[in-house]
Length: 233
Image (cartoon, rainbow, N blue to C red; front, side, top):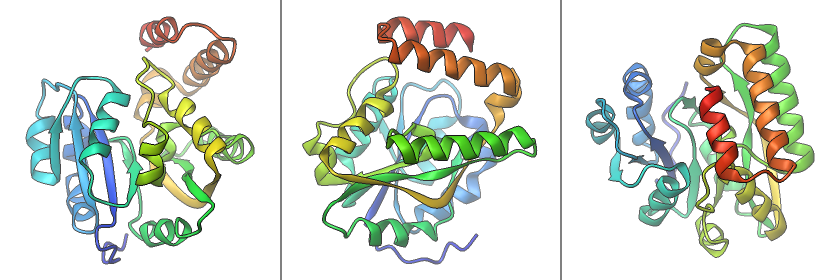
């Protein structure tokens, strides 16, 4: 990957963290290089492993209450970039995408968007998941957090930030983005670690996500969906 793309740190990358020592350590060089071309903000939710120690060496470290929405909102509040990019700790982006994001968001009517999905595994099922996940995002303009959500900072705050809910904060927020203006799914890929898929099995994980999504669209309480999600994990 080419890390020499100048961005003048106009992009603030916000990464919610909770007990991510293994993935931060494994990708230490990547995160360090990323911090050289963006404002990299880790928001820890009370980790009990070495996540805090590692994150403090890699970027700006904030401490907040556990909860992805709470952590991401705190990171956004402390960010100095005019563009916010929310990614998971097990995600990877080629820094060459940052100038593309900046150029796209210069369009007045464009609110924000996400990247095309790429699960970093060899199984043919992963390629099917990549394809269907990206097509779903393009058709619905509803984005999941692992797709790397980016947005103009002023619009993020105008929309009130992520709703503080137990689960599905990414879905609810991207729905608000869609109502605010035009959103986009970039063809550039975001690499996602397949660790959770491999731990539970690909078919089991697909079934779990379909079940959880169905409960959400059928109107089940989010607290109950969160509990079932945790039980299934």
